[in-house]
Image 1 (cartoon, rainbow over the protein chains, first blue to last red):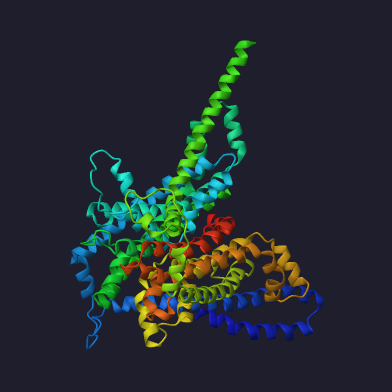
Image 2 (image 1 turned 90 degrees about the vertical axis):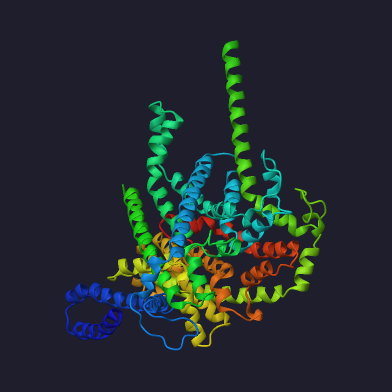
Length: 331
Length: 287
């Protein structure tokens, strides 16, 4: 709304300026040019931004609002009369053990994927943050999983985990005490760790690329000064490198948490939330299942609102982390 | 003399040892990271009987293009590819148009509400697709837009647009404001200055967002599988996942298809990674 108001104000103001300019002295004209420029600039800006907000509004914001409304109704596919039911869906949510299982699964998955990708990404970045032959090649090799489509990754991992022919069996049989091929993805104890491993494989290169970029932005003279003072390599890592990249690590951790919270395709195609009992069913999978398998649109929307609140929290964390990084960079 | 000489050989040996350990470590790490990709290629280019034995041979014993030939003969892969190209092409065009205008407003124009707009972009880029897939599905069904690739490209573009605005804004940020102002003084309108001076100067950024948005739509699965029902309109992502569900699809063909599907994004992402990462470390995000 506000955008429209500004836009319509722009034209009469401009016209008024032109009229006044015709009678004004040159000195006054010079004074007014920047002001007129600014008005035109902001009316153009509001037109452009309005287009984008309208576009996102139709495809993202409007559906979200619709979800919130649906969560207060009893809308199930096939029902005759849709009515408002107040907070009934939310009461059901709080009493629903499956919801709490999904919350636990989601946060377990997020915690492991986040920690794993940031630590491996940091390790790889530290390793590659020096001059050696083949460095660019190693960097590209490590970036490959990031560029790799999730669906292809899932297909090859499923094949590697095949209980009969999978190549991972060869690795497993090397361990003492393992006599037969494991069941891999259908084994309830292994499904979650495997999904986490696949997710880390896909996610860590992004952390690696960004951390490496921030390592290379550390001023050289800091290390030179430390060398003159006789600091060891380990001391330089502890007192220069780690403090310098802490803001980036924080930002990456939040980002990785958000990415893993959003993750649908990889988990869905690998285990479908199973092997049974929702062992690997995160909240986004639960939302999808509730709506498209059980056709319970209202309850699916309620789960969606719960997920939305978590996303809001994560976004605020991200803004905070970004703010810290900006401050560190300016310093 | 001899003491000094021997100690320097000792040093050199120790350095050499360190170097060997270092390279062994790097190579080992790269081998582990690349192994799944390697395994996919091996199983896609060897005759099926080698993959279907245990233990499987770690190196291909013979090379055959039969998996690819049977794949293209038995499954509508060509159709899927055309659909994906159309879908991703349309999404890219929409994103390019809107991201250029949005980043321009964010970088070069002065207006109030920039921070709020930035926060809105950030919020939408953090949202899981699964949160809106149900209402979007309902909306498209009501409008009779299910099964339509252009309609699917609209929602894909909406989800990748915020990130692309950040990436392009980062590219615009590196252009000195004086260049834009000089174009205005030369008599360009703001949009004229954008077209004639700013865009030619930010080609890498434009290429980066084209690649990001193209392959987002290319890879996207959730919206595609929900909104597209008829087999004729399937993009590759959905077709590929359907191969997995059909239990009778031989694995060599599945992996040949997966390989075919992955080559383009991997090549393009690696070519432009520098520009994307530059945008990313400034706070933008690939989803």
